[in-house]
Structures are given as structure tokens and as C-alpha cells.
Length: 449
Image (cartoon, rainbow, N blue to C red; front, side, top):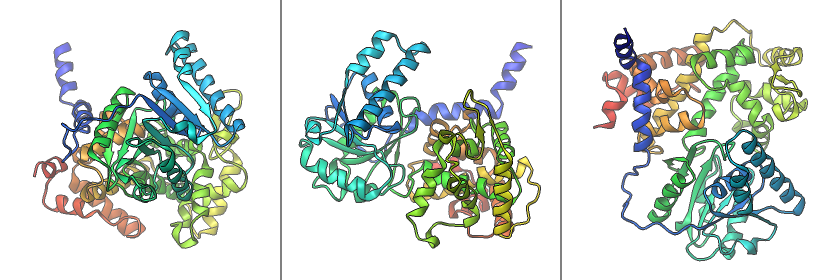
């Protein structure tokens, strides 16, 4: 009986998905066209610019690996706040048994705070981790160009900005690349290594090796808006918001996705990240550049009411300050109804099957474009990004492996159905998806061509 059960498990799609991820993780470290005999640069000290949630988490990564870290902020008050977050995180790690008090103290002692750029001059690697403003990041890199020693690697932690434009303001674009950590940076395992047009091979080799030293799983991405993960996430989030305004509720969407296997539903993810992040980004765009208003009118209305997400105690959900409970309240229901009416939408019942298919197939369709454009080296790299950075269930093998599991012909059929129902603006099939589906081929076959 035990052997029979084992054989059934071994032949299951879950087993296939997990085996795929085992090899995908290892293959992601192999970079096409990269001379691995190139000697890496020596990294013994790191500087991090920005002591917010992301910057402090990044600093902890390197301190935990035994590297000296300079942490820079614009003023002493902001710096003290950041160092306080680090202290709180280490206390939590000790309390949970992740670190001993001696290990935590040794890591703390490796982090030095400063408000002076001149203190960063000896760092072998400097990582900028300020908020998403291209001009601010360019100003920082211009300043680093004058301060950083020759041969120092200059990295940006941007989630979606153009790394080539950041590198262009320096006299050493060959030393610049993107190192996109995922929040919380001292916990999440994924590291998107963004290779700019002029990034030197030894810089890439150094950062891939450094990723392993700080216990991250690196995936190399090309330069485009959002790289791999966040570019796809835009489409996943768009469909979540459209399902919401068309008839679903935050909890029905989250329940559908969590029961399907996602670690957290999209509405809770939005609340955790902060609804004001997307709101501020949209405010910097012209109305025509903000996309379909149906896909952001609800979160924009919530932000304007002061509901910024979990950090303010309310967003799509209302959060219990005394614990981790959360509920959908009447205010949110009213906002959804009002915004649907304002957009001329007659709300309807949307079942879990439609929710899952719209969100997951939106991921897959955009992933197909990313593969075809060469932003990702291979389909399995996308799977690594989504399993380790976005809570995609490993037993489903990532979105691209899952597409092969379902069958590309079925995925294509469903995308065409959504195009006919919802319009081609959001549901134009990726050319690669159409080609493979029509020829009865899979992504794994395309990869070996």
C-alpha cells in the first residue's frame, strides 16, 4: 500500500512541478553568453543608501553574511529610525530562535550608520534603495560617480525603473546593474539581477556569486519596465481589480487564489505593500498614461479616504490592531458599488474559476512576451521568480510550467475567449503563445529548439 501510494505521488503533476523547480533554480544561475572564467571582483564591504524598510533589510542580508555595511540616510532622524528597525528585526530573530543573541550582536556590529556620502568611498558595492523616482536615483548615481572608488560596483534596487538611464549618468556604466530585492529583503529568497546594456561580465559574475553568499536565489533579467516579476504582476493585479469592480469582493478574490495555491491573495498583497505606492506612481503620469480607470478607481478612492492598507489599519480590509485579523467592512463595499456605478458597470456574480483563470492566464500571457523578447533567458527563470518572489505554489511549477501542464492550446483558447468578452486592449494573445498553440507544441519543446 505504501509503495502504491508513493508511485501515485511520483506520477502526480505536483511531483512534476516540484522536480521542475529543483532544476529550474539551478539552471537560473547559468547565464547565456557569460564567460564564467572571468574573475569576480572582491567584495568585503557594502554601502546601502536609504534606511527604509527595503534598505534596512538589504543591509541585514550582508551583515548576516559577515560583510561590513555602511547605511546612509539624508538626516540623523531618518537614520535612527532605520537603525531602530534593524534592532527590532534582530530582536525578533532572536526571540523566534533564528539567531542566537551572539550572532545577532555580531551582525549589528557590522552595520554603521552615516549621513555623509564621503563615508561610502571605500565600499566595494553600493546599493541604492530609495523610493521609485528616476530623477532622484539619477542624482544619487551622479553623486556616487564622484565618491565611489574605481572598480566599485554601483547597483540600484529599483523595482521597475530603466537601469540603462540610471547607468548613463555615470562615467562608468560598465559598473552599474540592478539588484532587485523583494520585501522583506532579509527574508525573501529571490534576487532579480538586472543586466544593463553595458554591465561588465565581471560585475555580473560577482553579483551572482554574492547572491549565493547572502543566501539568495538569483535570476538574471533584461531591462524593461518592471523586469520579469513586476512587469507580469501589473497584469495579474489589473485582472484582480477588474474582477473586483465587475462583481467580486476582496475576500472572494483572495479566497479563490489562496485555495488555488497562492501564498496570499492579491488584495491582501496590495494592502501589505501599501495602496499609496501605486497611487503616487499614477499621480506622476498623465491621465492617458494611467491605464484603464476601472482597474485603479477603487484603490485610488480608498487612498483618498486615508485607507492606505495594513500600515494605516485599513485598505481593502480593516485590520485588527490587537492581532492579525482582517475583515471587509461596509465602507469598502460602498466604495466598490459607487465606483462600479461611476464606470457604468453592472456588477455580476463572478465564480472562483473565472477569477483564477483571468489572473493566472494574464501572468502566463505576459510571461510569453517576456520570454520571446529575451527579457528572461528561459521560461523556467520566470517560474523561479514567481515561486520565490511572489508566493506562486511550487507544486504547480511556476506559471510557465503550469501553462505546459494545462496545455498551451487550452491557455490560448481561454485567452481568446477573454479577448472576445473583455476586449483586445488587455487580452491580445502573445505571439509566442499563438504560434506554439497552433502548432501543438509546448514551451519545453520550444526551449530545446
